[in-house]
Length: 461
Image (tube, rainbow, N blue to C red; front, top):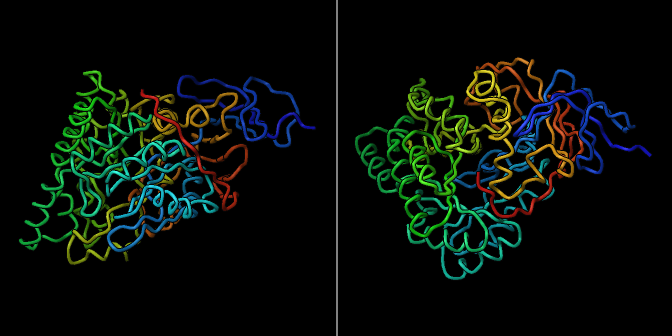
């Protein structure tokens, strides 16, 4: 009998704390040995000479098959996770949205039906609360015990947003039961004011989506959410920070010793308001919330990511075909909010983070995998290369050069916001719990390979 199911030989192993040459032995879906020159037999040996062996990427902010604005995100749990796998991501955490009048249990069951048997990588689920009452409040501890340990509240959007008192009550109950609350931070009333103003003035093109949600709209809401968390003495996670206005609020709170954590996304590091000025209706490709910002924010955001003001990079992957975006051809307020990004996250962060010397290889692993595993209760099962951890691994070739085009991607959508971007370094092989699911860039896994992850409470970093 072979001692290992697989050995990955001769690669440069990169974790969140160190980089070293070595071999990785895998048995029964777990990492069973890490050392130089493993000589035991294995059913399969993969040569990783000249390549990095890194933990599988973790994207803790995706929206597969999500209803929005009268349509649905174009990637479901099958197509979206195939794209994720091809891009070096082995775990996502998606958002189950509570419907009005429904329970959190019904929300989780609805999303599990979407995901179970369809996902090709592992997945956790956040619960997004939109309709709070006493019964829902009592449900929270039960859902945390079932492994849904993180919750999200929207501070904007008709039909989704919650009031400040609901946010405070949720923060308290979730924290008391060992979970973590996150917020989408934008000021509802300010957005409503500008949206109505622009509509009345006939300013209806896609760029007015961004102009109706200026950076202070985000900064105000982030600051308010942090203050509410301080008032009730709880941690807080702020999703998709796009600019200095919000990120500086996190920086201030962390410097004061508060457990406030947050993410950003590749689009806020690499794209800008200028994209909305593309001719015709092309600006609609970039309609997302928060919107793209003035590029003067880029240096601040990269620094915040490097110095741990922000802990990780997610994607907020929520794609729509251009035909769907055209629902808002007459008025920007009708354009479905969201853009694709799940497949390029790892390569973009390596190219523009490591190669461009914004941060080192350890930080690359932290912001694309390890920190998400810690914050969202999956560590050390996920997010690291250690004996006993799941064998979720990516063989990353730093010498592959590509120019991004929509044709090379597996996302179920007809454009990418990163068209034409130059990449230096790309995932070659993706391994999920010891099974190769992407080989030489081709998906070779099976529908249903992914498993639901019961998650625990957060570890703060």
